[in-house]
Image (cartoon, rainbow, N blue to C red; front, top):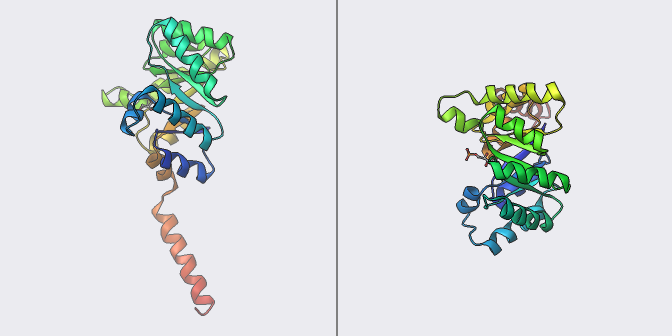
Length: 219
Ligand code: E4P
């Protein structure tokens, strides 16, 4: 399973990259705004800075919602760096644009997926990734994990190569559940990823090992 970090914070991205387990980054306009990155030139510079840190898979989201401008923005983003994946919203013109990008060999991430039908359409259009938003479904008392399960079944039924990128992850248990369900990728905040490291028995076990070693060594 691939691990992406869901942030535009460069320190968080560097920390995850240093851990050696990072496969990519997802951003969105809200995450950019959270870091105070505003204005086209600054946003572009920020994408370039992210590409300098990670090995591949930097999702950069288009702002346009009409076909012509989604293509224009997406092509400009893709030209920034071969690591860029153009993030396109799940709307009618977005699906048309994904089909176009797919024909041009430009990778896409279809975002704001909340139903299996939306994922199926994006896969038909040739999306590289679909991003079902688990946490936001959970927030409205709908089981987000069932959506991952349904999309996995549909994609496997027909052999769609589109990868399931489980997004809007809220914590470590979401990540483990996505792994059990066969999501190809998770994207999560740094805290959810590093929470996977922790277990109290690991901490107490290590403390005992170190204490016994010190005692045996006469320290
Ligand atoms: C990632 O691609 C999404 O934009 C992100 O996971 C959304 O997460 P949120 O629901 O926490 O905003």
